[in-house]
Image 1 (tube, rainbow, N blue to C red):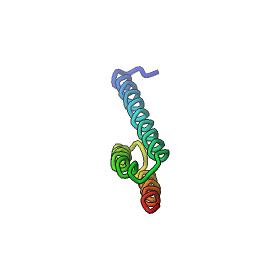
Image 2 (tube, helix red, strand yellow):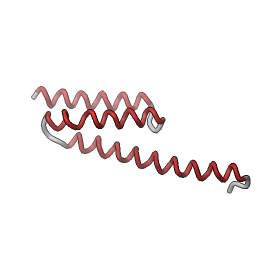
Image 3 (tube, one colour):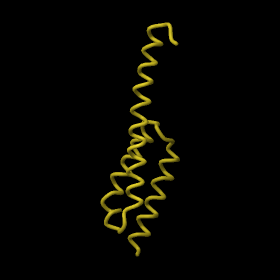
Image 4 (cartoon, rainbow, N blue to C red):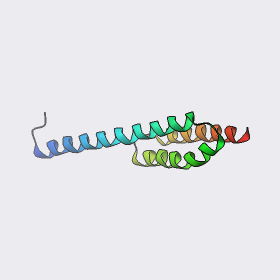
Length: 86
């Protein structure tokens, strides 16, 4: 365990950041899952911008890598376009 006060503070801060990052990451994963399970192009039209915004925020904060964010957005957009074409 940490002995210096600054190191103890860093441990506290890291714990808070970890909890926050886990929360936002899980919330975004749930939103992606919910979007994928919805049927119809209208569901994608309504939900896709919100989910893309959440993914961008995760990448900006460094919770996920920017390339992973790009891959997620690409896959969701392809699925949305396929649903709209039907």
